Length: 139
Image (cartoon, rainbow, N blue to C red; front, side, top):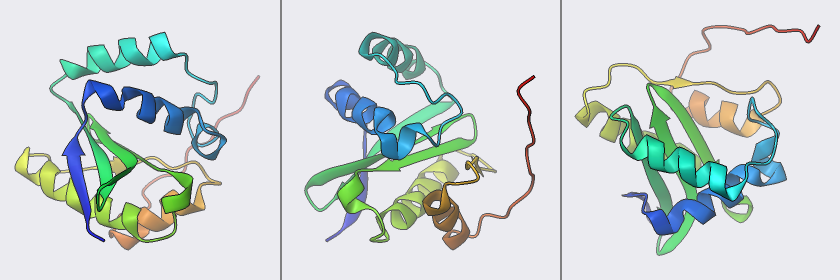
C-alpha cells in the first residue's frame, strides 16, 4: 500500500488527540500529562493561524494511520500502534521533508526522548545526525 500525507482537517483533531494521549506516545513528550480535549482544540485553533506550523495526517492506502507536524523547524511524528515498525514513519518523514523544502525550510530538527528507539530509528534512516545531548535535573 502507498504512504501519503494529507492536510489535517478539524475532523482529525480527535484522532490526533487520541494518539498524543496514548501511553505509546505520551511518555515520549516533554509534557507527559494527558491533554484535555478543550486544551487540544484551543491549541489546534491557535496553531491554524501560525505560519510556522504545518501538519498532516499520514495515510496508508485509504487508512489514516498517523500524524506528522512541523512547528518552527521541530518535527513530531506519531503512528497508530498497529502501523508501527512497517517503514511507514520513515516514508512519511521523507514525504514531509519534500513539503518542507517547498515551504523554503532549510533545517528540520527531531527532538527524541532517550527511550524512544522507534523515533530515533526513523530519523537515522532519513540521515538526521545527532547534534546534542540535553541534561536536566529536578531540584
